[in-house]
Image (tube, rainbow, N blue to C red; front, side, top):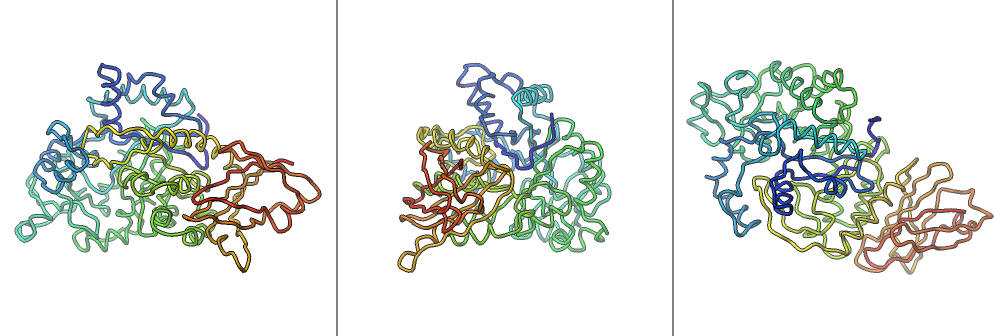
Amino acid sequence: MNAWPSQPVVHEINTLVWLGELSSRYARRITLGEVPGEVWDRVVRPGVDAVWLMGVWERSPAGLESALRNESLQASFRAALPDLTTADIVGSPYCVRDYVVDRALGGPEGLAAARAELAARGARLILDHVPNHVAPDHPWLIDRPACLVQGTRDDLARSPNAFLAAAGHVFARGRDPYFPPWPDVVQLNAFSEDLRSVTVDTLISIGDQADGVRCDMAMLLMNDVFAKTWGESAGAVPAEDFWSYVIPRVRARHPGLLFMAEAYWDLEWALRQQGFDHCYDKRLYDRLVHEDAGSVRAHLGAGLDYQRGLVRFLENHDEPRAAAVLPGGRERAAAVAVATLPGATLWHEGQFVGRRVHLPVFLARRPPEPADAALRDFHDRLLPAAAAVRQGDWQLLTPTGWPDNDTHRNLLAWSWTDGDTRHLVVVNYADRPAQGRVPLPWPDLRGRTCRLTDLLTTDTFDRDGDELAGPGLFVALDPWRSHVLSLHG
């Protein structure tokens, strides 16, 4: 397969839940190696470049026991799945017992078959890596204790929620600096030479099985973050940062392996400098969900090199379902934005049909929900339209208005230019109508008659090129409505 596209579109699948639902639908057990071809065709819909099979590695029995004892988790399970049974709880896919594909999902052979099915459809495979922590029954606690943050018996007696005894040692439980320790995982030591070496080996093994890797909570391993979190417990700070050490050594074996970081705290650019191809754009997510068009526009004023390295999304397995937090037309307006901006795009299985229940990753089953047929049809149009639009050079545009009408401030607009191929995206990101003019970056339109075709609706608009190159395109959009326009003329 050729090199990764510079702006890949990724479809995340909760593997265990998805396979369980397929097994029910087809009335037979279906593993990764037995997924029917027509199902893969629906997963790799037009405009999708890669599939992230979330949660394929062996889950921890010890982690499962911890989840079964945790009342807070149990409450979240029942909230998502009212008819919960013990059999529905399978433990977290981020409490990894070993980086081997779970036999219940089809094992390594099943994964290889799934990857071949994706490749046959021109799509790539992304898998998880959890660099910050492992399960309490992971082999490294016995074989490589130097890979983990260790404590003392006094630490354990003083803070039993932050430490545990295992394999003759006291280990720190995994955590990030802003939350209490996670009860089901053990903390790896980013400053350990041993860990850095085995992380390279682990990622090389993942690269043998996939085309890309999504690194969970990647910023926690950065030298400055790790030092602030763990202090003297981690030992001396190495001269080289964790990812700067790891990624080049993995790429020596797998030059084309894509690295995608789950990242927060505005550390995306730093992680890019340490070797990641793309990092989560949580700031855009927060602005689209909680703020207005002006806030979104300010975010999009960042440099293009920065933006091309971001992952735009409205939901994933960690976030609430978009249909639940973006009511009415706001969800569609936000979807047009994330689909047509520079950078990678992440879609979550179930998002296209309006699923609303956020399922904890510990569960193997989700409640039935009716599909939103209109939303599904909208995404069926949006994904191929976005694939056609995102070619060439991107430019943020500034709509203008009039002294007695400032609704243009609610319009978001940008263009894509690839030679004579030109596209324009305009989104009314507000709950009231908006009007304005959008100045276009194409002065050569003067003296021509231009036709604009909306790729979402097939509506056409004939406009004078002098007007477009002068004051700009006049736009009037109802609340939360969008244009994705192709320009000819």
